[in-house]
Length: 81
Image (cartoon, rainbow, N blue to C red; front, side):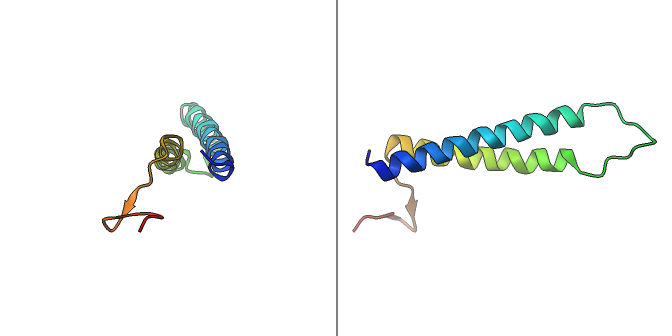
């Protein structure tokens, strides 16, 4: 693994854990009881779904960086001949 891939892996893992923390925060906010006098001004459920998709994509990216396998685009390996 070259230094560029190591840096990219570290940044990807940092992003993964930030997204995970935001998803946990949204999950906590969704499970709070509703207060009719203070309506929710932010759709935490929708944000949690979007964060879940981003977490899966980031995890897949981190796996490909760790394994050293490039995902093929259009049937040809990325960066190959």
